[in-house]
Image 1 (cartoon, rainbow over the protein chains, first blue to last red):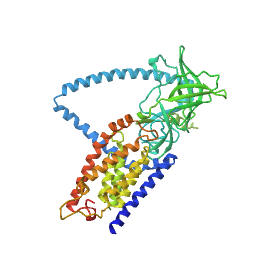
Image 2 (image 1 turned 90 degrees about the vertical axis):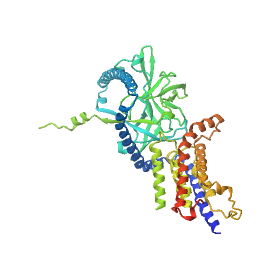
Image 3 (image 1 turned 180 degrees about the vertical axis):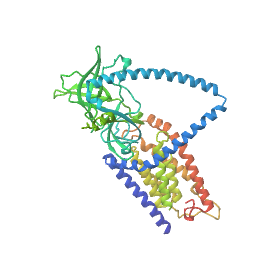
Image 4 (image 1 turned 120 degrees about the vertical axis):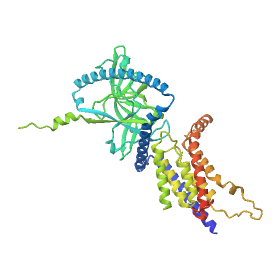
Length: 322
Length: 174
């Protein structure tokens, strides 16, 4: 009798958990767990941050011991040769980067001259790690990244991929300074909700995602900026662009870049490539876009933050002396 | 006290897994530890705590189905519930299940790993044999290489605790 009672007492939590799991599954399918998910990640963040901090401390300790070990190792010469080779490659890369930076700076100066308002703004990319991605490949619904209010993240900021995938046209493709084509990362989505340590990202394939975009086409005369439209997520792997009248030219293979960032002109970010374009009955194009990022590659992302340049703020603060 | 300790261990395990999500496969630490807590405590509370941790982990990092929190508690109950059948002491014969007792936890963890893998597969469309094969070949070894040694360690620790009388008599190799 006692054994039976004991068995019943064990079955009760098992049945409870089965039912609770079913309820949670139902709530997840109805997308009712977005808030809970970000709250849970926030609850785990103190432990997660402590683990990361401990790992960083131990790594720095290992790095400090490494030179001493390498002195006694027999493969010093081989390592040195490899390092010299790596150094040479880095020097070449550095020279290339300096050249690109110079070109980019010239381009920025011209861009600022064309759009004076842009000189007030400054863009920074806050790196973040993807902690969790909800949904299976092909139906990504949301991402949770390791940056929140504590890192100054606000709602609706654009999230780009961390690999720095650039627009497929750059200096190598003959684009000269002043063309106002700035290399940018692929847009992954937008910050939907921020917690203290984590943020929920709404991917650009999400059905509620909206962003103003512009078409970019390469022609014999160089790069041509095309029509401006509204990019909308479809809930599937592709997106669509609406609001482009049939009088505008749209071609399969056109690049889709950001027209603005939260209403302000900023760096051009890559959204995707046009995969199909058909006429709609309402005199508009139905343009389908393949996003520029791959879900499988998303482990590091960057959050684009816009802020006022400190020097411009100083200028506004200064008052004329009587 | 034991409940608080179990809660702290489970919370820290999930935090470690999330912190090292790039290098640790999902469930590699949590599954053996949750299974270990179920077996160590051997009570309804232990089952409830571990299954809740598994469910919370699924909410935080969802897959297709939460099979582990759904089914593991029931399987655990079958393994740890006290039986009314007694061994035949006169012939000194033990039941086969009782002889296999030290292997219960690693086998249970193996089952949990299997459920985890199935739960993460997209079952809305029937997976082909090649998809299943590739999932097993890529995810299973990396999960098992971490979870099975941990499970074996916990199993040995339980045996040691039994020998030293650190676990209550009612929970000894249930």
